[in-house]
Image 1 (spheres, rainbow, N blue to C red):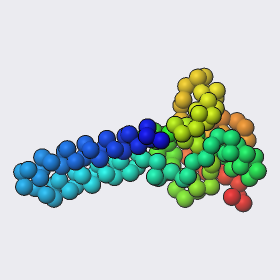
Image 2: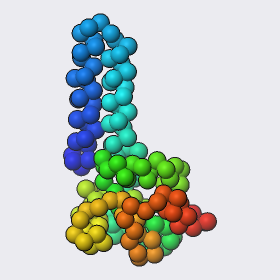
Image 3: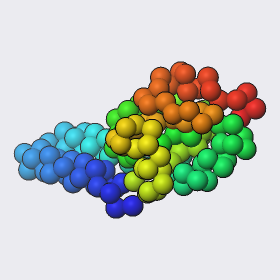
Image 4: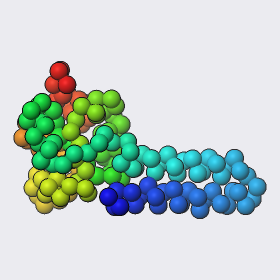
Length: 145
């Protein structure tokens, strides 16, 4: 859990440090803009923008029941963020597994990627796809989802 928040907390702390300079020079507008930028980056890299994660076994069970893909991800991964943003609202239809919170999820990703924890790894109908195109992932959603 703590590891998921390390990058966002560091970004906020860096933003505060960088904003201190403009504040000391009497430029509160610049300081606010700098801090806002860092807070935005922290929000994007935090677990907050992703739908609630479930365990790998639960995601597999749900996927077998409803046919929706399972996405293995980790906070701070730029490719995971890209996938999440490009999927838009349809991202909530997928089953998300945070590999930093779920050892079984991390093991599944390593098994699919020659021992590497390469994310995002999307599992559709039992087949793993590493770094898939977001448009392709959207196509894999069943019409009833």
